[in-house]
Image 1 (cartoon, rainbow, N blue to C red):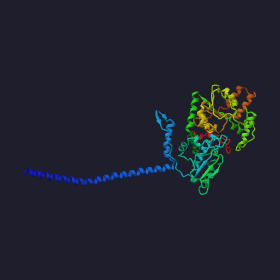
Image 2: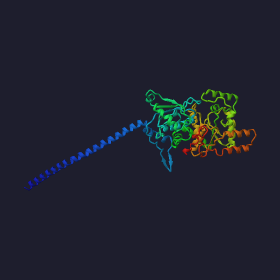
Image 3: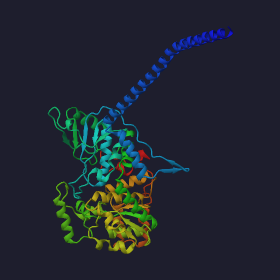
Image 4: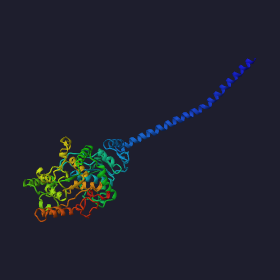
Amino acid sequence: MVMKLQGLCRSEMEIRKESVQVRCDKLQSPMIQRNRLRVWFVRVCLSIVLWTCLAQLVTLSELWHSHFISGITSRIYHTTLHPLEVENGVVQAPPPFLPPRRYTSNGFLRVSCNGGLNQMRAAICDMVTIARLLNLTLVVPELDKKSFWADPSDFEDIFDVRHFIDSLRDEVRIVKRVPKRFLWKNGSSALDMPPVSWSNEKYYLEQILPLFSKYKVVHFNKTDARLANNGLPFDLQKLRCRVNYQALKFTPEIENLGQKLIQILHEKGPFVALHLRYEMDMLAFSGCTRGCTNEEAEELKQMRYAFPWWREKEIVSEERRSQGLCPLTPEETALILKALAFDRETQIYIASGEIYGGERRLAELRAAFPRIAKKETLLVNDELQQFQNHSSQMAALDFMVSVASNIFIPTYDGNMAKLVEGHRRYSGFEKSILLDRKKLVELIDMHQNGTIPWNKFVHAVQQVHEKRTGQPTLRRVIVDKPKEEDYFYANPHECF
């Protein structure tokens, strides 16, 4: 009997347990379903967010010409080709490029630069500034291939084009070419024109900007000195400097070889970069023939007639020289360097192309200063081979060495002399001796004809140049005479 009662009790307890378990399962089932729904909902939301982000990145990369990817490759370039800066033992990463500026473009600006490397360099800075002022899209500038130098180099052969585009993207949109759909639109083609020289902000806003309502592409076929030195808004002047000193970087090939030249020179001690502008094109253009043979003078004259865009054909050399409009000859340069207290141990790098008259004209300078060097003597032929017949690329090497020199002395105030002077001011007012040629030729003639002895000649030369060493100063402004006033790129004081 007891055994039966125990059996019944166990059966009843098991039934109750099963009943409780069923009720618990019924209660937990909705909770499990709700949890599963939550997980599914979160997964769906995350998928939507991720696909949306991906779609946005693809769209932005198309709108910004793949700047997302180029930004990554650019950082890789800066990391591999340019060593990271170290400050207080901590490696500093290169600064990233700023985000692109968003604006509605009024059209495309094409520019064909004219002149040598440094004239084109200044023009590129001006064209970027004009594109920013007018809210235009700038096409990567085309370089001069038809001038005396006949250099076939394109922009990307001299400058780092990717860095140029990316480093300025927060100011102006730059593309490598005009999209085909804009070349012929509504029956109108691009407009070719040269802007007026030394023009100000008002000219471009009132005369040039309205052209883009009819022509979506305007082509400036001349770019030299097309923007005023003075009277522009402060932010535009600073943009000109930013392009010149930050955006226009030479290609890695030019940079590496230029740095090698600088290292070789510095290992031998301090050096003077002498921009001896006594080359055939300069002498023909200026009509300066002092020290030349009759045959050489005739050759220079014939060359002047061969280039129709050189306006002056008949030039009296001695008149030009007395006005200070001729480059110093190598012989005159040797005399002036000695008067400025440079001795025979001075290391001098000649930053120029082929000297007209060759070694015959360099003999006196070399006798006074035996430690003369040129890129052709410091580098082996194989290193310069890739730059042969590319005068602008060779000029880029001279530009780098001149900027890095201990003292820079130009014998003529051409475009390279002015841009190097400005660069050295921007770099902390590095010493540049800016020769007063008009006063110097007067002193040279007086010394050579016996009017003044050597000691008085030396004193006079040094006195003339006491305040001509690239010190901080404001530009000299001459209203309505921009050619005679100080050039912006020689002294961009707004940027210091």
